[in-house]
Length: 210
Image (cartoon, rainbow, N blue to C red; front, top):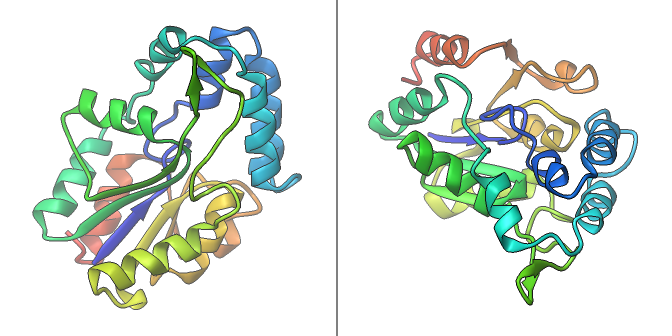
């Protein structure tokens, strides 16, 4: 099977843009934009560009301090490891940033098969305030379908785990849609809902995924 996780708000309760924003004093503005996007009040691409623009001029060193604070939820590494040990392909599909995801996985001592994420370009040792990557305009249903084709997995054999509005597309096309403490607008599209990684693991066990 192919199991695709969202990152911010799902595998991690760290919000990368907020952590970056704290490094340059704009965390409150970041959080407000994030909340509007997650509740489907503004589109994700707009919210991401607005948040990235607030980071213009943040030094690479300060950004590295933020990346180091990105951590997986308690039990998340165990879920990932159990899935991979069971022979499944594990992917992270996030509008967040590759560097933060990789840092958190390394810190937790785990890894996934593929990461589809965005990036914050750097010039002259500082963030440019721009953002680039496949999940700005692109959506997670397309990303999930592309990965399924790449790994030779039928869509009926895919699982999506997410919490926010930008997870809706992949939740709606996956064979099994699991909401991790999903936002109100997201919950109706979930086949089941969990509130912890331990509960997620139990759910996957009950459905004979692991």
